[in-house]
Every structure is written in structure tokens, then in C-alpha cells.
Image 1 (tube, rainbow over the protein chains, first blue to last red):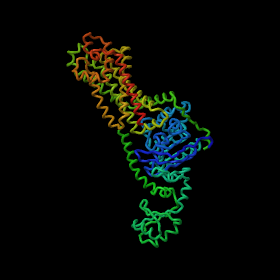
Image 2 (image 1 turned 90 degrees about the horizontal axis):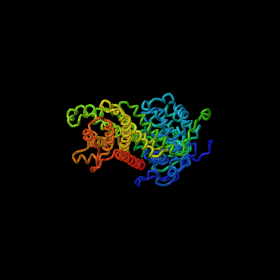
Image 3 (image 1 turned 135 degrees about the vertical axis):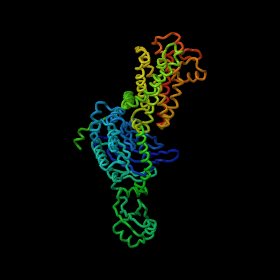
Image 4 (image 1 turned 180 degrees about the horizontal axis):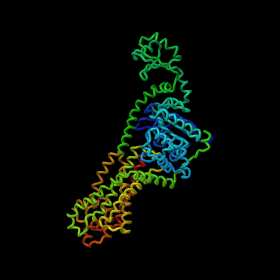
Length: 332
Length: 287
């Protein structure tokens, strides 16, 4: 870090209750400037509520949060001047061109008109949209729109950039280019990045990860440390009778297994050595075996009791909502 | 990466000030214009109804009304009302842009920006007002076709009045848009207000000697106080008999008191400002 900046984000005992339901119950963490911080958790864990409080869209019930050194309640405008936001749902004006969308943003944020054209060129180049600047956004593909949203969120050089599922629904190529921008940004401007994602392979790119479940942060560490904390190998068995297999594993080996994505899954220290014993001692027909080193999926499963893909099936509602929005747009 | 580092153009967001709020209002206003000009079909659609009233209804009913208008063409008579109609329709439907911004997500872009809620509402009101008034200008340009002279005083006066009416009606529409979050409901509510407001206002008939129930409704309709000054302006520049003037442009009265046009103008302005004020308060509270 070249400039001396306050912590990107500082959160202490943050609580948000809606009608006596605690959506967020006492969350604390600090994100140093320039860090890429991943925020994971099943749907309904309280991630969005936390983000909304950090970007001043919701008032905490109690506790405090500072973003870029400013209090999210008492210095709301200062927080807003220093953050950029890229939401999961689109917030571009499809009838305006890419350039007009960026121009609108620059004017709204009061950026010095002298730097606007240069900054706009730079952002459009970064997201590879310079040649489409005069095209209405409604002619853009989903990936192009997301890239433009990122460019717009960066127009005013925010110190902290919030990305809510920035790569969801995008093809692998666009996803990797979005990660390239995120890294470039961190290097060139020292921007702190706070992001949520459902993709565990992407969470690996984060400097640190927090996993949230039922309104609380259950674990927070680097991806490496988290994987090491799970320790054991993961064994997934395809069986003819999962219930019988679960019972047998418990009886014979004292292992508590769960069914995840259709396979009987459990953790043991040395997977390869254990598998032959399973074949020898289990009465249930086994149709497939997979042994893997711990991944962030295992970390997620260990701390939330579910895989992120199972957790995500609750996300179908979100997808429907996105589709309704798209239809509403087409109706206009 | 180091080459990029050297080239970075960093922007800075200044603290909130009157100047930054003014810029925000201006860009919100400009976006309304850009959106509208990009949508020529809508400009034409908004013209169809006023033109139907003016030329089809006006010409069709002419033979019935000729006996009672002292030689004044019905089209000439309803011209001020039709000008107001064009403004009214456009303003009410332009206010829907706030509902659409919410529905399509763009509102969020404005809500998280370091600008006050007031600036968003003021920008929307001024944007809608500008568009509605320009729609009125297109109808005003047809004056010669209905024997209304292009007199500078008349044109400027009507223009000012159209701007004012456009502002007040947009403020009303924005207020409704702040309270009603669904686009479909908004459209139905607007439909519910539109025709009654227009028919009761006296845009199509003189407001003296009405049945008492209609007279009361007419005095309650804010549009009445916009149509009346416009009609005065137009009739001041027509060469017609004194009796025709008295019959067709009697002016609005309250218990026998003739309302001065400037008083009516002031009422429309106050009403517009009040509705914008309530809209701002409501918007700041709920968003």
C-alpha cells in the first residue's frame, strides 16, 4: 500500500433486526485497505443485509461500522463518496449508451469535469468496451452489462468497491476477465474489494474469506488456512442405498456422514487408505468413489452444514425475480 | 501493471454542496430529455389525443355549437383547453419514469449516490415539466390552423403557463409515483385521475352557468385554474364580439368573486410546490 489509509472496513458488533427477527446478529471484522475480501454464506445468512448496512442503504439496529474511516450512520454522505457498488440485479439504463450511463454517474457524483473523459476512457478500456461506448446498453449481452456496471462503479475512484455476486450467470471467459480487472484495480489504485460469490473456485482468489451463517460469521481466514483447518480428505460414495450406507458407516467406523449432492460424503484423514476398508466392510453396493483433498467447498460444508450448491437452490427465487425484471423491461 | 499505474487518472468525489446538488438535478433532468427524444413514437402518441379533440371533435360538433358561440369556431374555443390537455397527459405519464426506474433497478444507482433525495425528486419534476411543456408547444404551434394569431405576448404567456401547469401536474404524478411502487398500479391510478380532471376542468366548455354539482367539482379541480388563464390569454388576442367574449370566457368565480388570472397562476404554482414538497418528504422517508 502506497498511501496511508484507514482500514477499508471496520465492523463492530453489527446487528440488524427486522420485526424481532435478527437478520444479522453481532458481526465484527476488519478489512485492511487493498484487501480482496470474500463474503460467503447460504442464502438468507445475512450477507445482503450486512452489505446494505455497509453501503448506507440500511441502518444498523445496533453496533457500528466504518467504511474507509467514515461511520456508516453519522457520516453517510462521506461513506457514499468513497464507495463503489456493483449489485447483483442490473442498475443500468438500457436506453442510454454506455458512455451516457458513465456520464450520468460522473455528474451524479460531482466528479471534476476535467478528468471525466480521461477516466471514462480508461474504465471503458479496462473492461474492453471502448469500441461500444456509443451503443445503447440494451443491445449489450449480460457479460458486457456486468462489465459496464463494474466500470461505472469505478468511475469515481472509490476506495472500497462492493461487488455483490459480480460473476453470477457469466461465462467462464468473462468471469476470468472480471477477476483480471479486480486484481488490476487492487494493484493500481489500492482499492479495497468486498465481494460475495457463490463460486468456490473464485473465492480462492480472495485474500481472506468470511463465511456467514444464520446472521453470524462462523469463520474468517485465508483460503489456505481454512482448507488446512478442515484437514481431512473428503470421500464421496455413490451407493445403491444411501440410508443403509449412512447407518453402516456409523456402526462400523463411527463416522457421521451426510448426503450431499446425492453422494454419501464424509471426511477421514487418509482417504486412499480408507476406501478399501469401506469396500470390504460395508454391505451396501457402492457404485462410485471419489476422494479429494479439502477444497473451499469442504470448508463451506464443514461450517454451514451444506454445500454451496445445495445452499444455492434457494437462489432459484432470485433467478425468477431477475427473469421477471427482464420481462418487465421487454414489455416497455 | 506498472505502466498502467503511471497512467491512472484518479477521480475525486467532492463533499456535498449546492453545486454538486445542482449538477445532480441537471443530469437527472437531462436524462429525462435524452430518453424522451430517443423515443419518437411516444412523442407522436402523446399528440394523437389532443389532435383528435381539436380537429375531429372540434370540427364534428361545430354545426351544433355554431348557434351559441357568436361566430367563434368551436376549434378556436377549445384550443386553450386542448393545449392544457397535451400538457396534462404528457406530464402524468412522464412521472411514471420514477416507477420504471424503481422497477428496472436504475433508481438504486441514484439512491446510493452522495446526493440528497430532494435533488432526485426536483430533477424528475423539472424533467417531466420540460417534456410536457414541449409537447404543449407542438400543439401551440398549430394555433394558426384554428384562427389564433401568433402574437408574441400570447405565445410567451401561454408558454409560461404551460411550463407552470406541466410542473404542477408532474409534481402530482411524482408524488403518486413515490407512494405507489408498482408500474401497473401507477398506470391505473393515473388513468383514474386523467379523464375526470380533464373533463371537469372546463377545458371543453365555459365554466359559468354550470349545474351546481358540476360547478362545485369544477372549482375543486386544479386544472380549472390553469385552463382559465390560458383561455384569457388566447381570448385577449381574438377579434370577437363583446358578448361572445362574455359567454365563452366568463372567468372562474368564487361566490361571485372573479378570480384574477395572476391569483390563479399563484395557486397552481403553490399547489405544485406543495406537492413536490410532500413527494420529497415521502421519498426521503421511504427510500
